[in-house]
Length: 205
Image 1 (tube, rainbow, N blue to C red):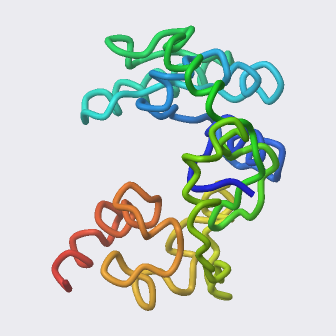
Image 2: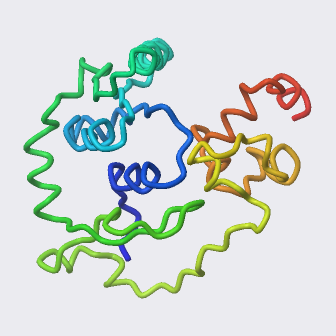
Image 3: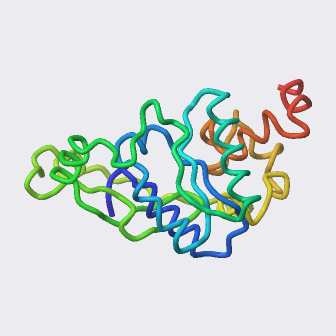
């Protein structure tokens, strides 16, 4: 198993090969400035799922959604870059060179999904002296997923946040239970704040 470093394409591959109910993906800006657009091509070629690499600003996200909707309506899945002011098709060659020299693929655990083979980055043996995981022996309790949490299904588009029995009650941004609520960018956290009952949730806290 690897440390905390994870790779996006492998996670998307795991999701795309499952029982998926999604029309496409918005690609992550920061990740894509390094790896570029090419690693996402398999989603369009093999799975017929479009990808649009989006920036962070509200207008970026809206523009990227429009681009993705256009692909879906036309039935032509491909990988596009909305975040063109920073991201490039080939990524950042220098950064990739350093990344591959220091790290190697490893299995990684994803909250709400489980272990995905090759989706993590472990420090190579050559740089073991810089690996805190090896130098500082710390016992970390294994992650325990709450039995009622359906975050894995939500991440795959198989269920909506409000279908989770914990959503808005036991699981809130102030007291997150699942991975989808932990981050302010998580699906459940966003739905809690901006969904149909977003105003009600905001008023109640």
